[in-house]
Length: 346
Ligand SMILES: Cc1cc2nc3c(=O)[nH]c(=O)nc-3n(C[C@H](O)[C@H](O)[C@H](O)COP(=O)(O)OP(=O)(O)OC[C@H]3O[C@@H](n4cnc5c(N)ncnc54)[C@H](O)[C@@H]3O)c2cc1C
Image (cartoon, rainbow, N blue to C red; front, top):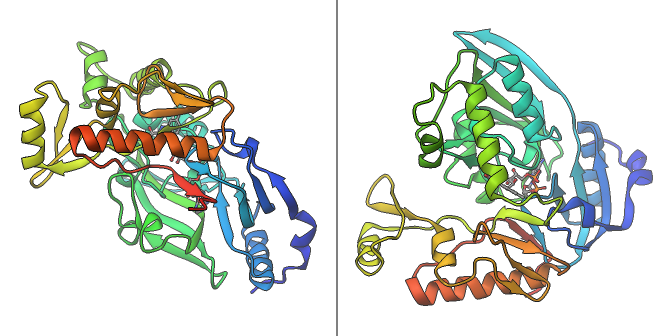
């Protein structure tokens, strides 16, 4: 492993994370270090091991809730760089460093004629976090394009490459949220995109807006941006982490029972005998949409989005618990929280 001495000067003590999480929660990192290179990351891991500090990796901070101060060493991944390697059969292979901003990258791809990611425009955050929950929107997921992920193993400090199969992607999940939780720091992502004009417009909200239009990648990109801007609050204006809950997947039998009581309930049939429900509809029908609970609340346009006025992580989690309880009581459906929670004490 690499020597850890050089990194010490770059480690900050008792560091305010308010500007590093999109809920703008004023929690502190016991130790904090911004990481610009793989060798710096390796030094930081040695330092943490020597000092017996737990590692927490953050990037854009748009999918985490800081429930309290974070003990140990918080690594802010800031690696930069985009390179294209091969161009075969109308495809292009692109390697992207973990600290690259996701939306800027999607825009770069569109401008270069590398297609596929247009439906994922405007998702906040950086490249390194994208595989963690297999980001998805408007009928497209990152896993459709991912070839492999470059990581550094937290325990050994050694670089490794995980294939698409190793990542075990699913709906808003991957190996990084399951068996490999906290095992790796992602340093880069390798994608294969199309150099031909491909579009994915079957998702109902997109299909509605594009009726009678011959879609091009640029039109899809612009329409997705327009849809998102009309529905989702900008975290810079109203702090939030996007969808706070996953859309629950229930058995077809349970879905049929719900349909009998609530004929207008939205349902999305899945593979096998399963049905996906819209968490936003369930939350809205418990009366939460647009409600304010002290210093936190539920957004008035999108019931899946919890917003922070001037509260803290505990306020947000209390509201989330309240929502979960009422949805469970009314619909017998269990909601699962989407963002990662850090510093939770109970
Ligand atoms: C307004 C809004 C809209 C959103 N819309 C969507 C959407 O449509 N679809 C969707 O899927 N998500 C959406 N999100 C959630 C979020 O944008 C994504 O999950 C995004 O990938 C998070 O990126 P980040 O860099 O901010 O990650 P962070 O919040 O910094 O981290 C998220 C998780 O990834 C881990 N992590 C981050 N970087 C690394 C790394 N380099 N190595 C290892 N682990 C790492 C962290 O430990 C944490 O557990 C939305 C969020 C907001 C605020």
